[in-house]
Image (cartoon, rainbow, N blue to C red; front, side):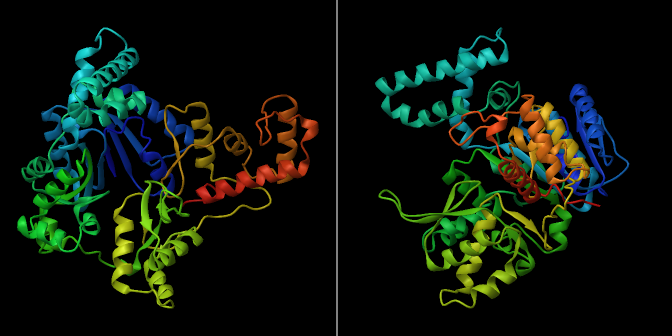
Length: 482
């Protein structure tokens, strides 16, 4: 796997741990970031990642890659570099490989362009980037207040972006609004760029147009497809207008792969899922009872999407909620057949809509997390990674076995350093008590009050430790990958 614009290598690291026999390469123009990344890989003990400081337009490789990632780069570089990225994919993607490119898109970025130009125009370029961001936030707030009083119609158009930007992380704002290059594209323009390098669009890793099928009423989606002669790029582009889409995660491959399979740009050919019933998938769902303002519904926790409260939906979501590991779709369907609310077509559409909705983990075989024994021992690369993140939180982060971002509190990070297989829970209780005594760590009660060592019972410490161990187990950190 190759990552173009890998920064410190934070995207590659969790994959390298999970797949120690894989061969991973990261390239970035920043020698500083590559040096830090190389130190990070060495500290964690990862040996299957090579990080290279180089210009993508001048680099060459002696291997081909099954996967190529280019995330957060394509829109933020000059045109010549974009061509170099596509040329690299054309030359070094394996015959059956796929590549991922993310980029900003129009029409969603049209309004953001107004905000961006205002922020750059109205802030002092001689200030530091963070000071300039603070200044631009004040300008957005001031401009918004004037528009609200004097130009209500324009305020309605601009207010969402003007209010949304100051809530973002400042490093994100610097990247999006103050970089020298930030070129959004209409989807059709992106497709046109691919064609010059004999590359073809497959789908998006989140929210492809065929997912929108579930949002149209009656035969509206069919009418849209017919109007655009079922051309994939045209239907996708039209739905980007409907959604005011501002970002895409596009999956591409060699044109020849589609030609060999007889796949044209007819969108009806893309609304199929091969080996559907053999797929395992997992997502986090939670039931929300009815309130005075809202009907009862299920919520997909990572993205906030909602699923209505119906007998069939309740059947599926309850099943997913009760099974923490990835569930085989075939098993779900067999289970659902036992109930009167079962409808094969509707269940198929429901599962597919959840998969398309984003933040769903997919695999083709059962996956379970390994437990811990009397002397808990984390998989050593994970133990070292937790330590690295504890002392260098701005370099990289943590994710669980489903690659969901984790923000571990101090306590699990603290306990992780002792989980090397030499200590029992009783030993951990002793260690924890010693560190409370010498003020290395501080525990609080449910009201936020600091607890003294004398007030803390061993059974309470054991409960705290076991809770952390169980969480680390669910994250997959005890699983040894070979």
